[in-house]
Image (cartoon, rainbow, N blue to C red; front, side):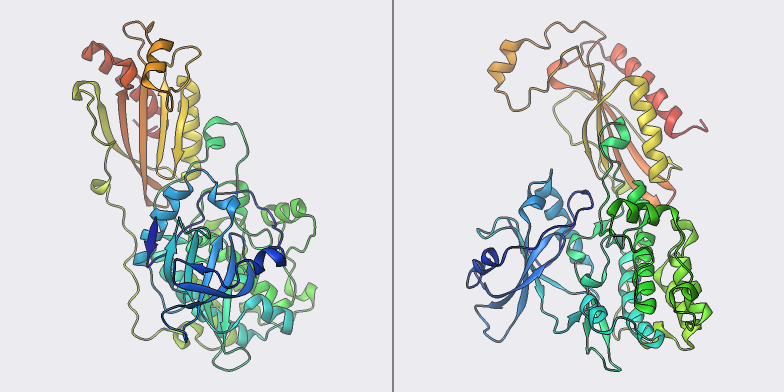
Amino acid sequence: MRLFGSSAKRVEETPIVLTAALPRHDADAYIGQTFLGKYRVRKYLGEGSNAHVFLAQSTTDPNSRVVVKRIKDEATIAPRFRQFFEAEVQSMLGFQHPYVVRLLDASLDDPLGSCLVLEYIPGITLEAVLQRDRILHHDRVGLLLGPLAHALYAAQLGGIVHRDLKPANLMVLDHGTDKESIRVMDFGFAGFSAKPHIQLAELTGQGPIFACGTPAYVSPEMIRGDSTDARADIYSVGVMLYELLTGRLPFDYEDQQKLLTAHVRDAPPRFNRVGAGHIPAVVEAAVQIALLKYPSERHQNMKELCDQFSRGVGWDCWDASKPADYTPPEPTQIQVSAMSSTPVDDIDDRFILSDTLEACLPEKLAAIKLRGFIEEVQGQVVENEPGLIRVRLELPPGWKDPAGRSGVFSFLSGSWRSIGRGREPIEVSLKMNKIDANRVAVIVDFRPMKMYMPSDPGLWLERCEAYYSVLRKYIMPEV
């Protein structure tokens, strides 16, 4: 599958891990190879958390340079990788910003591997700047904060969360000059926050809850397994500001577990305790607020952070970096009417019960409530992805999903032929979209499974309504 002109997302929240670099001999194997039939690799640049990175040249324009990011094999085998990759590539068509590296091309099925093709930005990463300069003057930090704030503010308006901000993902242009600026990279694996994603472990109480991000810069809510929005990116920016101004991370442990625990529990050292007492107090306050443990305590958007930082340095970092001829996107609005119900199939409408609810539920609370419902009705979760949860109720003992078996085999097994009247399994679909940080629109859909079709519509709907009343008790407690 070929996908053009956009970007993709980090397809499945995965455990925080530190990956080894691609061996040199493996990298050399790609030199001279051509991705997508037109991007010839010239040089291996390194790797990020999701991809190996190459400098390439268009075969149709020998003077052009692009960056090819070949997605790591371990990412491509994640559940629903193809679905998420395609969906987020298409979603990124609507997000272009002067301070964000543009995606030019993408493919799931290139013979050399799934890849993204990005514009080439001449410069060095902020990580390399830190290695060279170690500590930056607060005015210089303001020069870099302005463009970063504009990019992330626009992303927030578009309902986009980066989730892996770190110095290696920021490209610095005109290094060391008064025109120094930043471009944000790796929005290709950003997360779109309109659809709640409640992890399977949160619904069942079994298995690990995964967090994405890089340990030194990851937000406390990601580690806790809470829902995340743009304020998680603000925390990561706070970590980077602390590092740029003091020359050290706020939490500097080699042991990864200690590091993650510190993000969740410990307060960052005050600047005067780490040799940075000369930093203006308002600048330090801006950084410390960005590093608070809960999103509601931080700045609510990057403009607020940038404005407070500007008061500390005595000049307007936001206005000084305002991109010319750019119109920010309208804030994302979720329209409940635009949500489609379960696709139409050949099940008789008399056996379908649907309703649309608007629940005052932050995502984390929704996970708790839905888990309570599933446990009370002894349901089995059969599908779980952003914006969709499917649960089956009253499955017969020893039931196994016949998906993938031949119809003849399923028929001969006779696994559903002994189900009595009024005992047919019920499938419940919950389709969810965020309205805002504290409200979720939910389409609830009850229907039978095709291999267990009921014969009595009245009895069937009576059973569905009984379960529906239990569900409403959990997600609409005021009723």
